[in-house]
Image 1 (cartoon, rainbow, N blue to C red):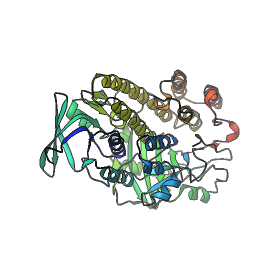
Image 2: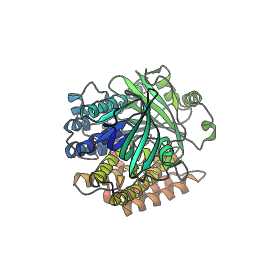
Image 3: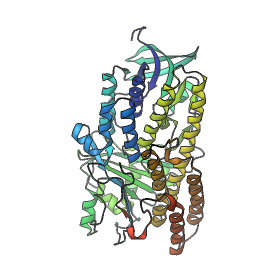
Image 4: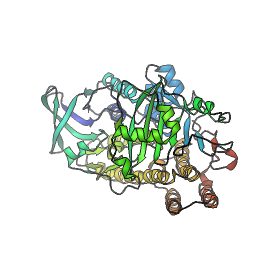
Length: 504
């Protein structure tokens, strides 16, 4: 690295999809960019489930920042036509199946233990599950093609801010170099770099949700719809093949994600309630075996499971919930996925990260000299991100509260789908959107807080009657009615929603 080449407008740390796309957009805005990656691609990562919101933002970024190839990744059909070599999976919607301890999965003609919410009208127009190792590596090739300086296996060991400039000490192959920049973006997706460079801590307090994950990738897992067929459970009125979706198994202790890719690989993981102390103390394999022993059909899915080469082991996280004390400071800002995380339950990760790219690129492109107005906008950005995390936290926490009572879970989850519809409709009408899921909307806040208080009261009871459940469901139905263009909670739907949440 020559002394002439190591002066940049902006340095970005972290070359996952968010860091790479931010680099590409800012490069198109005329900034001189450096992208630094501590690891090396291709690398394993989760956070794989896209949504209609994510697809909208991909198309917007493609158009606004002259990245025409990016448009192809906004639908399964165009992805397969243009880039079949980059592995993904069909995601037609969200599917939920309630399992009870010690019992084989069962349901009835009204789908009492099922919930399927379609998000697209066909496989061609479908959302996608991203094999992140493929997607992230591809985006880095685009970074290189754009002439952006990219350094992998490079660690930022320290940084000094003097005279409105960063002096970053980096190590690559045991060789130390210095990189200078006017501004720094933390897209690392964790809290360690913010602590090291800015002395900003990450906290888990003040979250309503408390969960951890145990997960991996597996080859040739059986299809859930085949298992249902073996049980003589009818799927003829399903809006789509449930294996071509974000498939969730709802347990008393938490939930399972099962995301299928089109190369016979499946991302499979437990996200479990961290308030259950016995689970918290178990190592990964004991948690895994405990859940398999408790739920017969989960055991059936996994009994012959073979780990994929990558990552090749079962991984256990610590507590998932985290939030930086602040999102920005003198000469730096953190991307939303670095600022904080709640839980993957509603597949908010990809869309939320893309929304953050939109905001940060727009803010920086409008403040090219990095002067005071920039920091006024970054303060607003911080307020927005913190408010969004609060809403996501409440939506997820309500689900954990209701997982033992699937009818309550079903009704509560409709708040997320309603808020999603509200956000999507604004984007479709080209109306300005500032807050993810309309987190600043007074009605969104009223509905969420009122309904959450009711959930707390209901789940604190010793027993729940059918009348309790019906009253709650009717209350939710009435609250979402002004925004419910999708027929959510209509009894005639029988928990099968064939609608497209957003006409894309």
